[in-house]
Amino acid sequence: MNKSCLRPQLGPDPKPLRRGIVLVLVMIVVVMISLAGFGFVASMSNENKAVHLRGEQLQMENAIASAEEFLKQYLQRSQSTEPSSQSLSTAQSTISASSTDDEETLMRGVVVADEEGPLCRVRFSVMAPHYDETGTSGWRYGLERESTRLDLHAVMEWEYRRPGTGRLALMALPEMTEAVADAILDWMDRDVVPRQSGAEADYYATQNPPYSPRNGIPDSLEELLLVKGVTRSALFGHDANQNHRLDLDEQSSTSVSPARDASGDSSLPWSELLTLFSGERNQSRDGQPRINLNQPDLGQMHRQMTQAFDVKVATYAALYRQFGPYMGVGTTVDVGTVKVNFVNPPKFFLPSPLDLLQSRVMVPVAPGIFSVVGSPFPSDREKLQALLGILYDRTTVSDAPVLKGRVNVNLAPPEVLRAIPGFDKALADQIVTSRGAGSKRDRRHDDHPCWLFTENLINLDKMKAFFPYLTVGGDVYRGQIVAFSEASRLSQRVEVVLDASSRPARRLFWKDLQVLGRGYPWDVLDTPGGISTSPNGASNATSFSY
Image 1 (cartoon, rainbow, N blue to C red):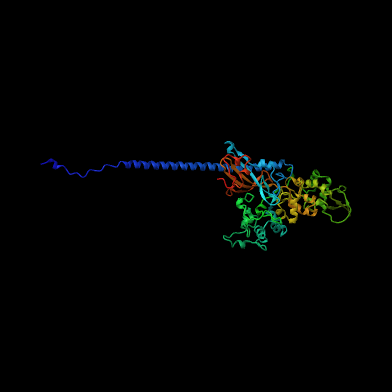
Image 2: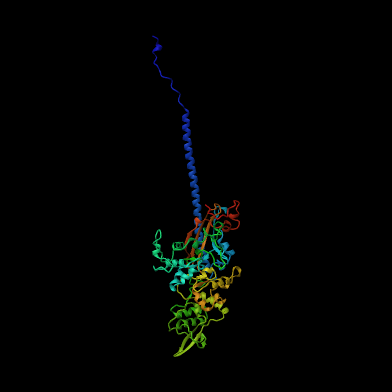
C-alpha cells in the first residue's frame, strides 16, 4: 500500500495574522493619552488663569477697601486741621466749582500696590459729579457732601410739623407730580390713611406679587421704585452706568431733554437730588462743643458765652431766656446797665441764635419798674458779618450731638434750595447767582449761611425763619471709588457714603457698581502718562475691563 495515501487530510492553510492592528491600537491609546494630557494642560491653564484673575479681583477689592480707609482718615484729619467749617474742599461746588489741584493730587490715580514694578501698579481714583450753571454734568475728583441733597428724613419731619410742607418740598424735584409726591409720603408716613392722590396698603395688595408699604424711611433710594408712580427714568434718569453724565450711547434726541430748559428747570434725576444720609457735628470748627443757648443752667451758659463774646452779649442772652422778646414801645437802655439775677429761671427758648439780633427785652429793675433792654448786636449788616460767623460757629439751640437734614446753601443745586420751607424759585436762582462760580466765589460765604441777610438777599425775619434749615458744612460724604490695575486693565467701581460726624468715621452705605462697567475713561482715572498713553494703547472705552 502506498503510505502516502495513509496521510491525514488537512484543511486549507490558515491565513497569516494582521500584525498592523496592534499598531493601530497603540496609536489609539497614545492619542487618547495625548488628548487626556492636552485636556489636563488646558484645564490647568484655565485654572491658572482663573486663579490669577481671582487674585487680581482680590487686589481690586483690597484696593477699594484701602481707598475707603484712606478717605475715612482723610476726613478725620481734615476736621482736625481745617481752619474753616468747610473741612473738605471748600471750593467744591457741585454746581459751579471745578476740581482743585490738591484734590486731583490726593484723589486721582493713588497707588495702592507697586511691588511688581511701575507697570504693574494697582491704583484708585475717587470721583464725584460736577454740574455747571446750565446743569450739564461732568466729573471732578473728591467727595460730595450729602448736605447738597434733600434728606427724606427731613422731608417727613417737616411734613409732621406742618402738613403740606413735605409735599411742597418734593414738588421742587424735576418732573414731580402731586400724585407721586403723595405716594412717596404715604410710603414713608406712619399711618395707613392714603393722601388725596397717594397710595397705602390697599393699593399695594393688588400688585403682582402683593407687598406692603414701608411706613418708614426707605433703606435705599432704589426702594422708591416700589412706590406707586415712581419710574426708573425719573429716579435715575438716562445715565445707565451711573457715571454722572450721559455718554454717547445714552443720549437720544427724542428721549433726553436739555440739561436746563428755558425756565431754568433741570432734568437731573431724583437720585442726584435726594439722600437718606446727612449730618454734621454740633461742634465749633476747632472741635469743641457749641454753647447751647437753651440749656437749663443760665449761669453756666453765661460763663460759656463770656469766653466767646463780649459780656453784654452773654448778659442779653440770659435776659432773653428769662423774660422773652418785648414787642412794645419804650426807651431802650444799654444792656450793660442791667445785671442778671440768675435766681430767675429761664422761661423762654430761642428758636435760633439769630433771635438775639434786633430784639428787645423788658426787664424788671425794681418793684413795678421795668427797663427795655436793646440787643447789643449792631444793626449794620456789614458790621454783623464777623459777629455772625462767631455766633454760627460757637452757639447752638440744640443739645443733639449731630444735626441732621440741613441743606448746604453754598453747594446745593437750586432744585434742592427750592425744597426748603419758605424758599421759592426766584430766591433759589438768586442764591446760585450770588454765590459765584470758580475763582469769583466769595470766600466769606464759607463762614455762615447768614450772608443771605448781610448781602441783602433776604430780610432778617426770613433769615431767622430759614436759619434752622441751612448750613455751610456737612460731615457726611458720598463718592465713587474706582480701583484699577495698570497691567491687566482690570477695574472695579463702588459708591460709598461715609459719616465723619463721629470718630472714627464710618461707612453708612456701600453699592457695588461693577456690573455697570468702569464708567470713566482711562485718561480721567489715571495720572497723566499712565494707562491712557501706554505703548499698548489702552482704550478709553467705558465698558467693563474683564
